[in-house]
Image 1 (cartoon, rainbow, N blue to C red):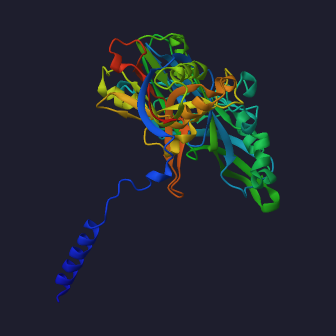
Image 2: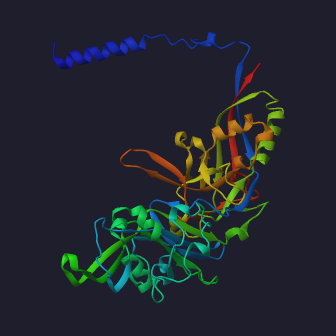
Image 3: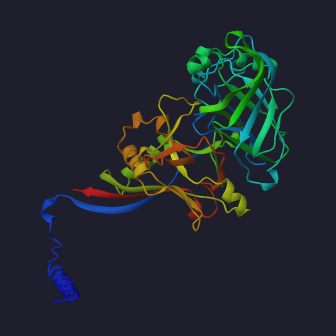
Length: 456
């Protein structure tokens, strides 16, 4: 028999064997008690939305320093300043005896920008650089934690620096600040913790734009690319060095940054929104769902005729949030969040200090809040959350159960292949959503629960 005929015969035999298996649809039926019959159903709920500003959110960022602003006739003004470490580029330098300053400057490196409107690409933005008085690791973790007491009132830059977007900008530094860098000891070069005790970092502050001017730009300063250069004359008689012109370098932006953003979109806050909901990243306004109000809605459903107090097993629960049809699709593609998901505020935060975490089931759900462009809506799976809320003692449901609908950042570590889901405090994004009272009922935000009932 040829090899081809052998495999053909084997495939035919396997096909005959498979077709002869008896399909017993009653198999396993005896394992389920006849006292219980599983019924299924679907219920749709209106959601008790409010629109609230975040006030303050977590600010640490391990990717870049974010500096800039955005002015919008609807959302108002969002401004972001950034702080990070200054560290020597060398761990073996010795600056000699009484180094004499020649000049000092910083090359700020802006590797990318964000702007919905291309006409704003090269707009001038005034910045000021200050020296931190407080160590980076002692600054608060929230975006509004920094105060005027945390940085020197005297700028370290000369003149009025202006940034125009991508690229490098050279900014001359004051003799006083350069002198502090030239005072770096051999021990501080060898132990960066000692250096950071004295040189605590820099804070870049952008001028607040006039409120009537629409537009703006956010600038991203990548870690390790902005360098401070100090030119000086070195003397060290023991090493035979006399009046040698020398250069020493320090890096600005290392390990992590703390970005301090603020928004005026709180003017859109509404405890009873009608046709519109607003979702803005950073500390801007966000759709909010009171867990207490949602629990009351579910309790009424559980006590109603469809359920009548029977045990509910949630198979799937999704929140659908339709968005308004964009007036300009090109701008929409730039500014809409790639992910819009449900977050809770950690119990140790407060009503005014929010540390957001996505619902813990995010890693195992299919609907992670990506937009469906054909339906013009975001869909987010909240199955475990709804099941837990149904089971929760009403007296235990507090503000830590509340849902905040916010942009989410998703990153994957190439080395570990791990995916991380985080509140997006790295990017400025916004989207205008349909509200609970929009004219078309099918366009209203809703919760859809698919469930089973164990019926005695």
